[in-house]
Length: 572
Image (cartoon, rainbow, N blue to C red; front, side):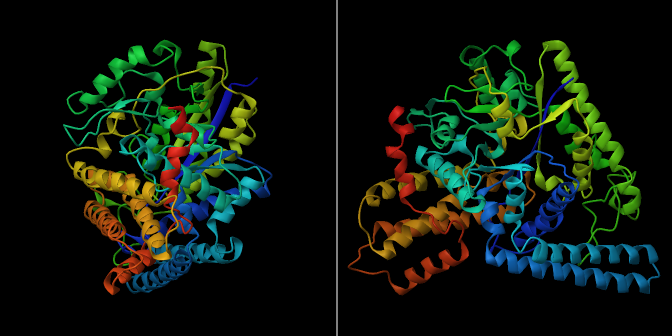
């Protein structure tokens, strides 16, 4: 007898880092993720395919990540990166032998074999295309790939409907380019949602209020069928970890939600999926499975036998130590033993599957219905932060395959088989600290929005001015590169990294760089005349921007103006 339905959702994302630094911040981020997360996941899917197991994962690959993974500079750079890691491992072996550290010598050889396999698989098994690898598993029904905003723009805080429209539209079209069909599902950046209401700019006391469309309206306009939110967005009430003095907007929002959002809280729960008035369905994250896997303290990644992420051997930065019992003392870390570590995975996979059964069983006992348990994680957790994570997913997939009481479905499959007959309207919020916008809008990063908003408005006006006109190639290039710089400046990663201080200087420089490029390009556009061509310095600046910031080769500035004629805009 079925206890319910299980959906594993993996969110894969990387801000644009190509040609913007290498280490510790820059291209090494995406090279590390490719070697430690994306290729291992493809390897897991390949092994499951050989065993005739289709795990039915729902995998988001953000458009900006897909663009980078298919960029020739990434492919060449990744091969160089793997070879560098191989050389580092060989050098570490020599040093360990001099010190007669035989165990560490063996671990260095282990790393050498690991990166050799990554390099060989990338070149020969996946033919230099990670996206094509994931496409293969979608084509055979093992996974479903979904999309997101073009550059992971934080939708609720964008100042123009045109920018939201372009982020969603380009996200959809980029997916088609890489995966050969249109997406059914959508990952809202940071799981951030905003309902339709009279909105006011948060950076100006004198700003006028004006009516905004709901987030799901933009998705419905592009034929998107479902998206995901955090559990408190379904439940209503006070999100976990909220402090009223830090988030006064939340108190107002959820007070209003008691009357404005439906159905009432006692009839809402994260084990159901709901249809919004737009016709788009939302699923909610299960908080218990999140803590079990994500937490380094209470979750599986904190197991003492597992590879320690934070302690690295410089200058090569390979990891040779385990988490150990002294979790907070890097100096007390003990050598890593892969055999001991991987012996722990099966028992934790069993615990995870049993917890899913217990949670869905309790819900069925209470409601009399089979519910959904949606486990949502950043893909980069598995392999990068938690080295043993991909193998954990492999064991979970095998256990679920033989578990008849749980139904494994992708988002699209679940909608096809169990269309929602429940309607809901949602409050505003995200999966960030406090459940609101605090991580992406606070005293540390408010300045970014103050700089972005005027340029969004200026670009919107220029798009409207030239959209229906025949213009020469230089102005077309200026406007299209302005569009790329705007998209890159809109990435939610910059505000996130500023708030968390994990790469604050890099993020501030990156945001300012794209804002400065955009501002200068828009100035050229405003002053441009085909009868007075760009001077040499201006043309060189444009060419440098085109070379350095090159995702979305087919971007068209007219996309922003197309919002004005869309059914969404007409319907109000």
